Amino acid sequence: MRAGLYKVETIDKRSALLISIDGEKEHFTFPVADFTHNVSEGDVVEIWREGVKWTTKYREEETRSASSHAKDFVKKILEQE
Image (cartoon, rainbow, N blue to C red; front, side, top):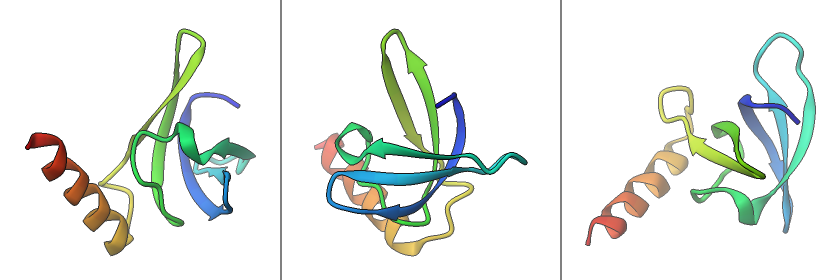
């Protein structure tokens, strides 16, 4: 796996299938527990490495799923309290 932008294609109990959104369309699996947000199918996420650990970020601008936006909004509100 390499750093970049990925679309979450499918999610099973423990892993998500990611497809790179650059021209190469590479496929990778990523542990659901390692995402830093509540991931949903159709989300666009940015993934990069910090030391030995992969870090993820939800890309709101590229994600078109209303449920993903709602989950992210609720998480941000709960974190502020």
